[in-house]
Length: 358
Ligand SMILES: [Zn+2]
Image 1 (cartoon, rainbow, N blue to C red):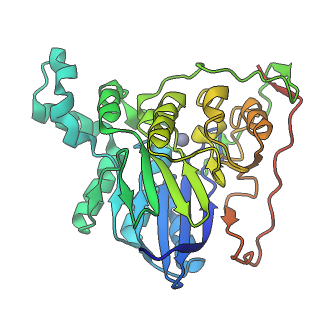
Image 2 (image 1 turned 90 degrees about the vertical axis):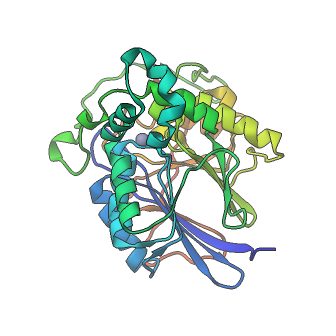
């Protein structure tokens, strides 16, 4: 019988200042012997990665990270993890290694006349952020494991609900060609929006839901996001990366098939910065929590988070929070036994919106 988790703190760092958001999450848990374990889920941009390192050193008071989880290879989630791997004592890196699946997916590329090695080179070049993590881990002798459905670590403290290896390999050939052309994120003043964008709005009421199923803008990379369930004593916390409804549905099916309820979560991390393209009413009926957190850059409004999504979560009993406390101040959730940190004030929940974007 492993020691029981008694208390925890979860910090959602604020990533970026412009229209695009990322994820950078630190959490620490204490077991009933008082032993602390630290985990990092995604690292945001390089700037956030540096903040994350400082946060762990000064607030958590340690340089040890028991496991780093890179949910998917997008730069706004993965690039800051280089800072964490370089500057802290990381015991385990969990990430998908697409280059190792080259042989399995080669058939999808037959028409390109690619050799196995050629395909491996292509994947490595195109997934630069992820490959950077692998290189650091190899140099620092940090073991790497791939988080696939069913995997459980640290005595069942966390469990991977998705993706399955089969689903992952079905997505890999659909990755876009040129991820390195993506805009670098960070504190670039020009990226800060002035909120002049005019959106067409439509009325909603508590009993009128305009959010619909099946409106997702498909992204193969986002759907490879590791979907993680932490079992923190009495509390279950679900982290979803940028997964959309297809990937979340498979994860919910896996959970249901294994007797795991996802309608009694304590905290739900809403996928993809609150985009209405990632969730619909059906999947939100299957993953419910009284606290829903949306990792979002202060400059991402009005695109992210979607007011339709916020309303849908409130309708299902959640209080909805975003990173609205500023760049250097993470949104912190703590179990009942953990005192508030000095200098931290409660962030306010979003109201129900009577007008939402069309
Ligand atoms: Zn994202």
